[in-house]
Length: 417
Image 1 (cartoon, rainbow, N blue to C red):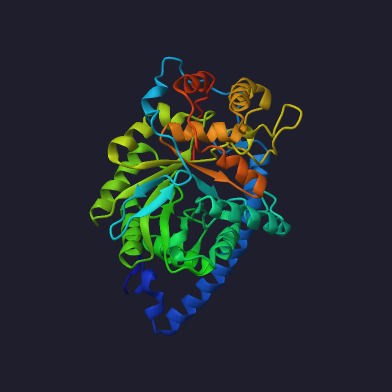
Image 2: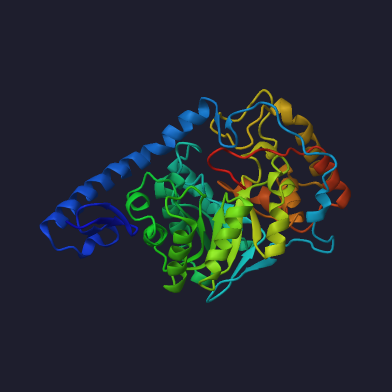
């Protein structure tokens, strides 16, 4: 009797490698392929309802940032020096300003803002309505006209529907006129993640490219640190993606400093740099800054990127104590009355400068060297976000925002950075 091997580990007494099922001509192999196909279909159905299960948990009080949610924000220690991260005042971000991400074979030039595509096609959290496409199309045209053509999506967003919409938006554009970034779906409820974790990132990127009808991805990001495969295995699969021309640049998200540096070390074995780490960061979650993530990224040449850059709309002024965000908007989820002092400062600066609150919040991130990802669903939001360009917060304004900022916390499962 011989061994069943998955990832090279002895499991039982059949001579089958789960990494190479398609090469098995035997009847038993065909039977197993059929069984696993049925299981894959089962998992696909589970994935479609996964968003709704997750949002039920969030609505009942489970927080994306700290287990069960706390209503009390934790202020940043006043002695912390927030000016260490601030870029020189001579730097004024323009929509044409670019950051260079280094790749093994070719580099990628990204603007100082990425358009977050999580809402596109996502009905569970963001209540997406297909009728919104017209407004999104108008917003995209405006963004293209203003040189902001960097889209951040993920295999998990809308169970793949976000990637489909992204592909439709860029289908008539020259390939060198936009930058596409997607994320490897790491949650182990997926056939590939369970049975072939060593090659799952590679296989799932090919599926993303098929959904978007693209030949390659500009930036391929590991969505979180909870992948079934080891960091060493994931790094090898990412290297395969680069070497075969499926992506140019690789990145991670939600990684803590230790895991980020380990991934950087593993990728270096294949002469591939780690170029991005994307975590939640804004004036109401400065944890990556206070814990040293921003400093480490600067020292190691890794660009830090922020998601939920407007705290899921809280920093736009949209929500009030009498009009709280939906319970599913759990990133940085505090009652508005508990963060009103912070919002008042952002609003006062915005009014003084004649820009939106969103613009002030985004300029704050940029001023700290952080590349913000920000959601856009319509033309109004696109225009509001782009008001972040062409000017800079003064050091005094940054200190004022720092003085009313919130540190935030890690999640027990997801947010390690």
